[in-house]
Length: 505
Image (cartoon, rainbow, N blue to C red):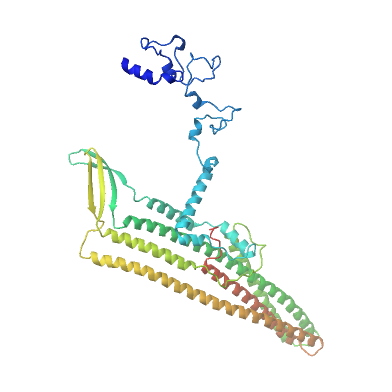
């Protein structure tokens, strides 16, 4: 014991004045166990600058640990302490990085944004969806309607996407060991409890296929969310178009009713004076009744469309009007049905790979510990036992992969057919709209001519009424064609998935 103490004293002789435990004892070998009279006891966290202490007095032991907990001096340039009222020791546990000053909610949002960025970088489909931009003119009536209905969207498809992302996170950890309890009751009434650990060593690509399936499932959910959102915007804009068409036709019917009422007044006066036959007055009144009925129908259609549109919007849209124009030619985006088919193909291939792995033997290591003892071993197992139909099952799985490839080709063909048909319909509607505008102008010129001839006494009232009816019909037809062309453009944008921006979705 004395030799050990002498060795320790010799090793620490140079710093005995800095370590309080050593400074309590004399360096004299004879008095090794005698404490110094002036240093009775010590405080492990005693500060060097305590009141009444002489900094140059060697009899009072200094404390090397005190500085670790010393509060930073306000007049000191020491930058060890990282918090205003803390200690130097607390700086060791201060979170590092740019997110140190963020709140818990902000850090969670940043973590979610990083996860979405990583997800976009790993998936071409999701990246393509996020970079899509709405084709609707910014600040237009279409844009206002879209913003309003998206703000009130319940987003049921978003819940499925969130669940798919969580499943993907779970699947990304499937390569780690599995652990769980095993509790059983033996035939002798003894309770056997074990903790089992399993690690897959070789599974014919099953775990990898599970991760691929989960990733493809996220892509399918993301495309479905984009389709659902675009369809909601299209439904709202379709209701808006119906309301605008009905409003325009109702205004035209109101104007026609007022003009026809003027003709009816003239005819009634002529009949009263015995100049015209009463049958002409009856015909005019019948025409007035038809116009009144058409005007009421248009107003009811407008009210019904606006009521339904307001029901799916976050705010009333009564004050919005107009049909903005936009170009749908030369769109380079891939249609959403094709993206959905591609995502479903990847999911089907991953599922087929999982099924194939289930028919082949795999290797796993397992161990257990508990009341029955400890064990460790290797197991060769398969989900499905081999039988005479195993070969046919494997061929069927390979055929499933080929079928998934063909479904993509079929979806591409169907989408191209719909787009070409819509483009042809749009071209025809645009031509008909121009012709209707020309015919309306020509009908107006004929009406002006007949009215001039009527005032000159060379035309009868019913002649002018007939020409006016033609003019009114051309106006109604032009309004119908304008709405038709606008609707076809919206259908094309909906097929391409360009009615809502991907970042907003």
